[in-house]
Image 1 (cartoon, one colour):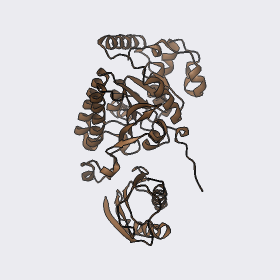
Image 2 (cartoon, helix red, strand yellow):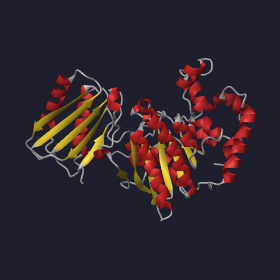
Image 3 (cartoon, helix red, strand yellow):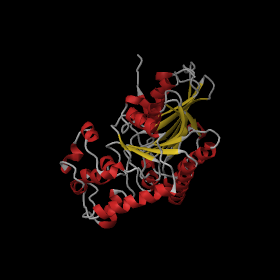
Image 4 (cartoon, chains in turn green, purple):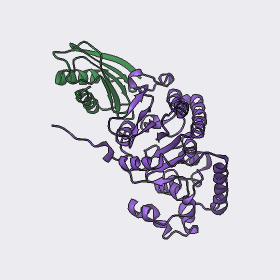
Length: 104
Length: 308
């Protein structure tokens, strides 16, 4: 098991009014991501707890690409991972931003 | 692009616990207690190098069902097989005790249990076993206070171990074809008694013994539904007001029924033998029928009981 976090800076606040949501399930090959609007608009943070050790470089690459693609200012992402593939991780993060677009 | 997702049309088996809740209760009526942002997580899993879940695999809360207030708990069968741990169990016990406490003051008259569990979580076994016992007591006390406790089962983990016992303690039980209800699971039986006793890799056999259709025909479930979330919703609406009184007479009648069932079918080795004995047509084909054909089929006398 491994725990780490990746911080990002952002140009804009993530759209929508939702305060918190969760998507995915911590199961084999899957992950759950909880998203909370708790940070200043110019910051974002992904906290990772993963069952699989030794893939930190890939996590950094995926999360940094996600920051560039979606600009999730103000959001904290907390991940419980059961060994998801990088594409699944990206999908869940993007899903999370989309779910936060809903009205409060 | 907007994607319209209609949760009540979704398949119960494929849906997550949160999706099942979304499609089961009235739209936007669900209010979660102790939600994931509270991070009430297992304190034990990290020592085993396991990552937890923010809700510890159990979602509890209140909502309305066809306009009536209900309490509900849903297990996520894909997180550690939906198994009971300390926090998971405490959330369920708390919900049931809350139902009992509120029953006298106009609280919800029904608790829905969306069970999807392999039983106790091995990594926190003592706490899990205790929480099963506390859950059973809490169900009994809620029923004594006049609250209907309805089990809804059709997820990938079934309702095994303590989850099977909890199921049997409920006021009413709803299953789909995917549902499996038992105490010792097929792998456990095979490990302890050998493959000739129970071949856990024979999927058809596992479903013939523990599956939703067999449970329905032997009176181990009160309602068989097709697999969509809205089918479970419809059954829950109908059953939440039809709970039998929880009295000594009810229990004595159930004991008599079970004793007769054991006497009549105790020697049978597989489900089709039961169906042949009880006079059902084409006993070998029951597992292959469509849901519509199964629902239209003649019933055994066992499934007409009203003891529970």
